[in-house]
Length: 438
Image 1 (tube, one colour):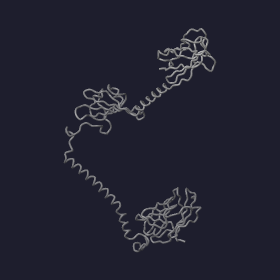
Image 2 (cartoon, helix red, strand yellow):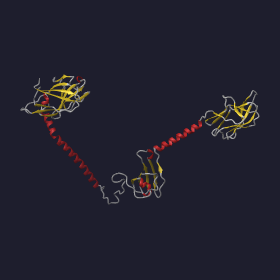
Image 3 (cartoon, one colour):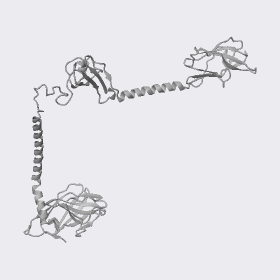
Image 4 (cartoon, one colour):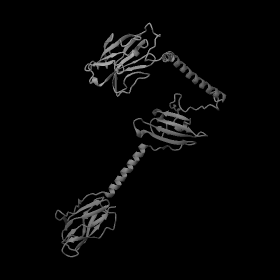
């Protein structure tokens, strides 16, 4: 049993008082911790499926990682309660100092054995850590006079000391060097500009560009007080709010917009662009342009996806309507008969129908004998012919007399007219009457 034994709890989730372990340089197999690991105050499920590991950061930037398999110094006392026993390896106490970053790890997978690393081993499949506890390692009387086995050499220790001692100074030095290099580059650029005479006074009228493309803040400029956009001949970008826009007589649309003026190489002529915009309504995003010289050309609008879609939709609707009109099927409709003409039975009623442009008539019609020639029915608008030559259609009569028939005229007014019959007392078939409606 170790001479020094520390008992404390470490919870994976809840904060707790940071335990403190006191030791002295060169102590060996003398400091043992008995630690209960919990999860928010409760036992850790399947604790025995995990491998407990001790990790801590040593002075000089190195890390100790110890799962107990090398020195046989890690033991699970009670897997149900999560209690482990760990005896500190002697390498932990090789140098004096305060070790603030000490903790236990529960892992599945990962490397095994005792290790001293320059960086943590994170190769485990599952890894969870406890809060930190502190180890304070005091000096002993022989500190600096004996060799610490199984640890870093004196040269490595010296390198670590130099690195720790000069790290902050080196960081400041590197920052100063970077600032110096930047200042040198800036100075060289200024010298080059002065030498090439690229730096000029704003009072000069030749070498300095007077017109600002935007306001000093980078946003669009305010327009001058004018009533026409043609009067704004200055190069740049302008914001025309709704109040200013209402006073203009040559704006391409209504409401606020952004005006862009682009001057040409010579002269005072400009190309003007008016851009209307809305963050919520894509149809309001419109772009007009024109040329302003001695006179202003008419505004023209760029096509956008919204306008193109509207045109495509209109073309689609027109095409559907055209096709529907060409191939429309009205179905069979009863044909209203005039005086002296009547329906025979119920299975062959006089009816008419339109499929596309073709109009058909069918059915059997009775006629009062002796009825003078004339109109026996009228077709409604949409079922009429524009031809003046729809006369003399021969249809059969319901008679045993060979060749019994009637002559039917079809008129642009829609009237269907009996012109003559072979057998005065025989019914008349309307099947076979067919014409185009256009």
